[in-house]
Image (tube, rainbow, N blue to C red; front, top):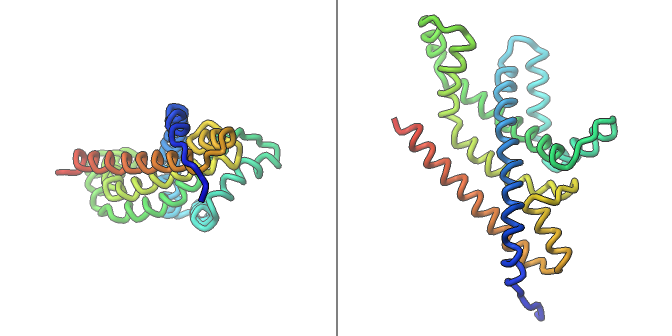
Length: 220
């Protein structure tokens, strides 16, 4: 083995990689916010009395959960482009991860809604709340308490999925920056080892932050 490690090259590029990590977090957070919104809609649609809503929700969930995330991103970037809807790398990656997040979270939210006793809605209505107000103020907070930790796991998964952006030309996230640095210096092991450590630390930071939030929000 004649490979000579040059860690100084990777450490000197650390500021650029950390800026890329911020872009990674931006995509992950936006995809979670949008994913949670669509997941709530899908969870309600799957319990709707209308067959069309149930079918649309089931189709989304089945496609998101049973096809590779890579294909979903490809469809957002190349598939929509073939029918005249052109998306740049960032929105295509965001759309693909959002689609995936919503599909996985929808089933989690559906279980969370079932965990909230129906008497909660009836009690809220008896106090004079409308159905939308009761759902927003009474049912949703209890559901989010049930699904909080699965949401944390999905957030970590969303962070890791952002690395797929490099295959649709995104070059300013952590993986894209790392790949550009690797092409210029051919120090593959050093750069990707440092990038892996950054991904690991981000995931651990998200998990620790979620535990602290859970302690503050759900200790009573």
